[in-house]
Image 1 (cartoon, helix red, strand yellow):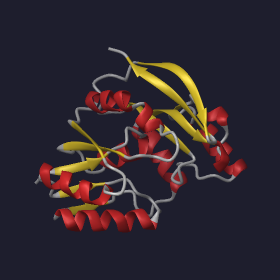
Image 2 (spheres, rainbow, N blue to C red):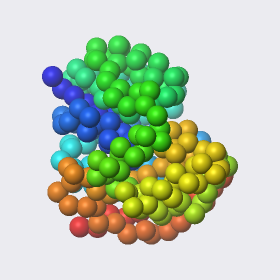
Image 3 (cartoon, rainbow, N blue to C red):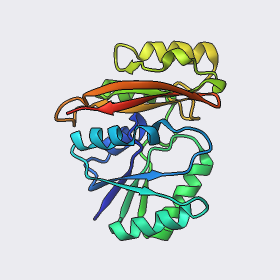
Image 4 (cartoon, rainbow, N blue to C red):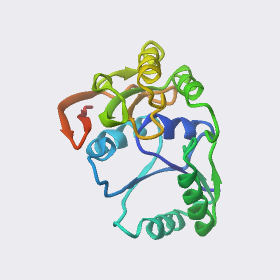
Length: 213
């Protein structure tokens, strides 16, 4: 069996992988986004933090318009028999992943599907995952003040209070905010990082982060 975890470098996909630990390989798919992506800007740091958690990582850039075909091709090349993804409530993406898994000849596992996002946020930090907020979509209602927050057991209440007050999803499942995994019980040590700059474009504010040895 070859278990492939679809990972972004953020908190949710990593937590999904921990529910079926260990993955044989982490697959990071790079899409052409219409707006700046904190995951793409911080790709090097994402690879580094997953390496610290002991996950071999394969990165693949998907050409626009051929994303499904290329994803299936890559999964077949990896010999994937099981795919682990971190969807929670976006039905369209779940259906998409079901089609991908079927065409790749693999079983799809979605361990977070249907969970309450507020409860899930708490489970993530209580598990011991720490993450840096590296992107905020301000027009979604998430405040720019979250940018640079180190999300953990001590600070989770800040996200909860802002989500309740401003009406966005506390987990960021609609893309309200994005994170970079910093530490977990599986890390040999926390990611050593440095914030290089703050960028803003099209209603999205993000941090560019460098990882250091």
